[in-house]
Length: 158
Figure (tube, rainbow, N blue to C red):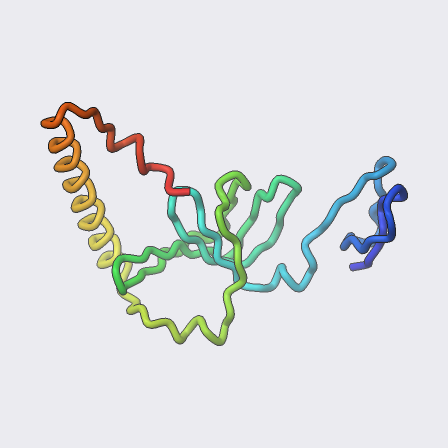
């Protein structure tokens, strides 16, 4: 990895780039992920609420990610479960949060790890309870003459 300045029309700036690459025109800048970042364990929070944990292997200018040895972590209350997913490609527009996981603090979590079947069952029960609450709210609002579409309001959390 080398540090180079790629734009000639601004004051000196440091841009991380790979050796051997040249800019394609005046004012052209590009950045690559530092090599050390590719060996770190990352957590990615998606727009649909899913949490992925894996090792970053590639990223492009649109923030599309390729994660290696990925797990999907499901949280319900104070329990969590990990579902192995392997290689996972994530479109950049779906990324809400991307952060490095501290290996020293990873094991010191107050959450309880349970099996995949148990966490999926707990997630299903939680979603059913949420749908029941939405139905009750829609019914109460309908009795008062108000329209409410539960599928359209809180579907996209971020």
